[in-house]
Image 1 (spheres, rainbow, N blue to C red):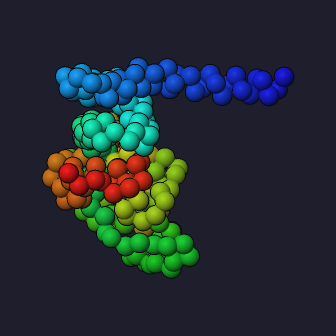
Image 2: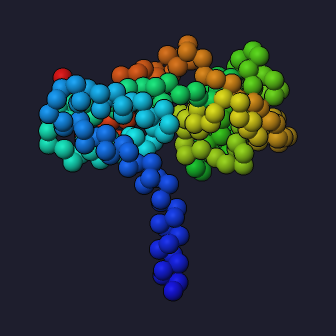
Length: 225
């Protein structure tokens, strides 16, 4: 009886995703239709379906690409996925705190002293603070040390912290644990949207973003057209 309950629980949790993927799978099948117009329409419909849930559409497209041996079907799936990734992942709003980070990686067990204070592992050393940003409004100052966000730490140093913040939506309020001198305080900062100039500075370029997404999800290099 317990096993039955566990099975039903897993099924009920998975059912919404399965239901969302069914109409997408039907459209993917139409990519192999005999008529060119039908194949073209199916590709456009995949992109439109992503407006209601891009995660489900991408899951089905990835599975369809891996299973198909039809060159045109794979080409159309690739085209649809590129459009969806560009709009819903690459173009998605990204959180922006508004600090310049001193690029110092502090590993576990590291003994780093900044302004007479021993800095904890993976902490972030604030360089400059962008005027009118969430960081500035929260009262962050140059040489502050950020040791946690919402009580959590990020996987590694400055780059991990940047990804950690960008994964949050603009408008999100984050609680920063800040070490200033010998005093530890908690401050709340409202994240802004990552400016275009900052995207370029960080190297967030559309094609490179898609190539990386493709490697991670398809498991191979992006095919050369």
